[in-house]
Amino acid sequence: MLPRLRVDLDFMPSPVEEKPGLLIRDPFHYSDAQLIIPAPLVDALTFFDGEKSALDLRAYLVQLAGDVSAGELERHLSETLSESGFLDDENFAKKREAMHQAFAVAPVRWAQHAGSGYPDKPDELVTEMKEYLGPDVVAPTSPTLGIAAPHVSPFGGVESYRAAYRSLGPADADRTFVILGTSHYGMPDRFGLTRKPFVSPFGHTTPALDLINELSNAAGDAALMEDYCHAIEHSIEFQVVFLQHLYGPNVKILPILCGSFLKSLYDGGLPEDNEHVKRMFGALGDMAAREGNKLCWILGVDMAHMGQRYGDRFAAIAQQGEMQEIAARDRKRIASMESGDARGFWEQVQHQQDDLKWCGSAPIYTFLRSVPQARGELKQYQQWNIDDASVVSFAGMRFTS
Image 1 (cartoon, rainbow, N blue to C red):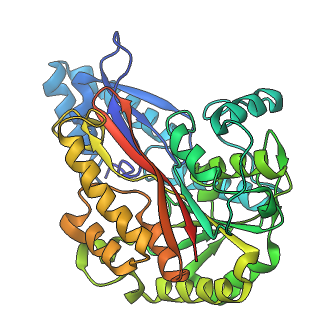
Image 2: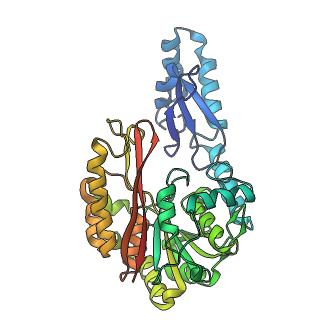
Image 3: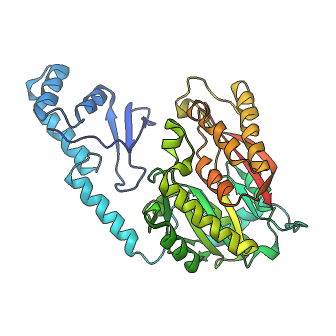
């Protein structure tokens, strides 16, 4: 039998006009290959389902090409997909194991988005951060418990990033920043931890090892230590850059990736009905109650994902047409965040199995359950066209107790 095509790959129309077809790439970075499957061969990918044989594929290609020599094409397609790491076979297993081992033994978590999401040269990054955040920040008159900022590339969500990070002041420099990020690639109902310092063009962060170890011990298998997803995830990396700009490279952080609560979303009930989630909420709640204002919570969260890129039939334009209704629904969820209403927030997410596609819902719910005294204030709401037909929404928020 032919091996299965991996289901966790990115598939999109070819962006190369002279090469129409299907672009395939690996969001996990197990492979750096990118393939464009020519349009006539796209349907041939359906034969890589673990149930059909090379002979089945060859017969299809002979019929497609009208040429009995199509056997060579079958071998070439199979070998190219395998060598690229796109099939669930022994070659991919080796690539995956090698990447996981490389991250496990690496002394630091290297920057993955410097040079793309933000400048990779310190002087250029300082200039850009100053432009993003505006004039010197005026310290809030009352302590900030936490903030919610986007995790989209900073140039796309600059107004919301600015609103969130201007809620912090110089007095926050010595606090430990608990960064709750969306795990776009991690297991549902699990949390990802790492002891590694994050590295950016500004330098190395300081991991809060005592708290990281405490969570790891208390959460058990609810959390994965040295989760490989940290190596590629941007939702925490972008927050690190803003914090380092404000407080220097050695800022102390506790980075946590929150996997989606899929069972609750699709089957009902609350996320904490899952024992893994319940255990992590308990550990975080105990830590929050004990540490109090020594901690500052940073939520790296985007909100709605609407339009053709995200599977909707309509072309989404920021603040126009359908996106005006989306804005009203977003603001209703935000109101639940402001009032600290975790259950009310989650009931809205569960409605129609989150047809708004909020990829920040798990970190938000984790925060509201772990820090129940939090009350929020919306500082900025924003919609941004990530392309001509698709919109992402996000917000800058400040939380107090």
